[in-house]
Length: 188
Length: 188
Image (cartoon, rainbow over all chains, first blue to last red):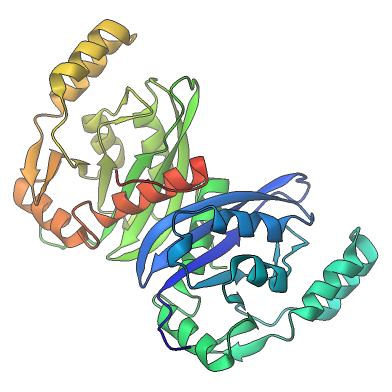
């Protein structure tokens, strides 16, 4: 990669009650460097299969899309087990995709839940496997699609403005929680 | 005032269709200096009279309230003509309140609309009159409650990070638009 990545979108989902069914708010932030440029929102079905398509559409339909250089996701699944197909999101947007988490996920528990309790869980587990292992980068856990490890590290470090979580994800998390519950709480 | 104001909340309302009736989303941001600390949300009735109470409750019920030092509002009315009682908001929160607008409002048109078309419009017009004239401060128009002109100027200038609109209001505007319509648009 020859240019620095400065225009980035970051997505997180809103909290929801345990018995909630149906759509869940997903918030996207668009940053140019450390400046918040715009806010996107969409909804994905709890435990559904439409997260990839909804994220792709939210991005490609946005006036920010022509400037965007990378996509960050707070975890590979939104609204419970609505697992994102990283390869498809990368292909449909033409942008590198980074999944970021503070801690390594408990893959054994996720696999068990998917295979035993979630309709279509095997296909979702395959998407998680296809995303590859999480790698420790700059103090967080990262899965990469379309970006080499060194560029991923530079991108994450450039966006660690107020803590280890990249600022687009920290901001998306605060917005999603604040809109869904009236007040944002806790760090992601 | 002996201390610098660093912890500030800023509120803006979401856009709504012309024929919309009922509640309208209002978004609050909480900043510590240039860092977004939290997001609040509430709803106020289109052309209603509950904005003051909803803003006060959103603030005093928030875990950020003990640190807060000032309130910024993007205009004195939310959701159409739901006019904020600045003196009451100041009294109920104990915090100074600043109304900020890019341009001077057309008071003659507002007065006419209130008195001719809005139920309870005379009382709302009295609230606008009681808020006093807008003053040009640091390139924006400001109404003050509980803050002298020099402290108001210092506060606005300290928060003009990405343009003339103080960052808590710029951010609240982007969030409110992005959540209500799927994508934030235009500057406030």
